[in-house]
Image (tube, rainbow, N blue to C red; front, side, top):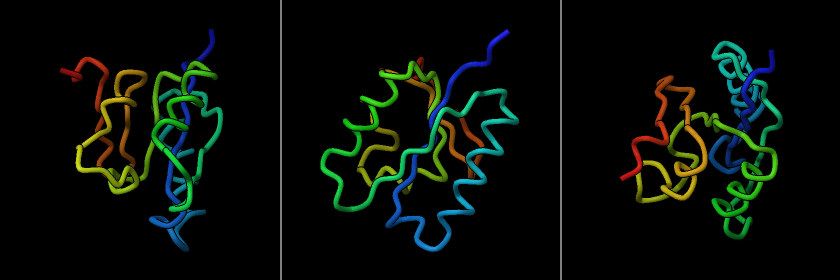
Length: 105
């Protein structure tokens, strides 16, 4: 039986020197939640359209969840970017909260 696929996401400029720790926390929580973590996508503040690029990765690999260290990594006025939440559930490592696709209005 195969496990659902997930991706990790973080911003290098938000993680800073904690990036290795954030990546390990993403891997650990994805494993505990029963996901097959396909990859961790790490963008910088120089990445154009990071949410769209992340949407492309999620769609290409068929991920059903995105694990992120905290909502701070989205750098947006929205709590969670709706464009991402229409594609996959979003799990925050710091709070272990899952924003589900069913929460999209």
